Length: 247
Image (cartoon, rainbow, N blue to C red; front, side):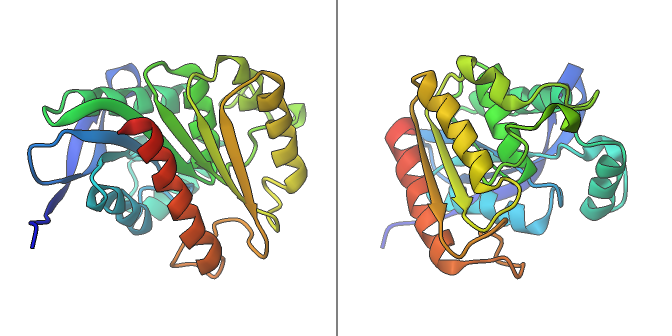
């Protein structure tokens, strides 16, 4: 039998404007080299279910890190931090971009990293994947899972999130995989079609897949929204995508 092992732990990293924040790192044991993945958590926060996803990538041979985007709220639980972020109008885009950039730098500093970087996110994290893949260099592949408000209308913009990510599509610098549920309302199938049309217009490398009988958060095994058939197929597509561009 071949040896299997992984290490998963909380680490400190530098994010937006040099802020020191917590992050969850999971990696396979061994010399590597391992591709790197930044996991962007959903609005429920830096929680157990997204840490499980981070470990899943380590099991498949990736060094993965999930920065705690809500760390600055300083509450006692991920749920309280998320509520605080919601009440303030959402995560500021500049902070998110800075934190993801810091996570990428952390992965690149690891002696067993192979030089390739992927990003993946769910729900609000899916929106942030689209944003960071357009705003940051050095990302080799991206996966957005039911990211809402990528094509936000003007009335949905705010001081914290002043530009719809779709407006940055021209600078998208890597191949993008999008996974959606046809019963979702945010993003709706019409929202997904609008984003796809812009990607196609600008000649970007992308694949979109939408699942029947699935709505928002169909990957979430701990929620009633979980749809096993869509999730299993979605995971196959995710690992195929990252295998194609990161190894």
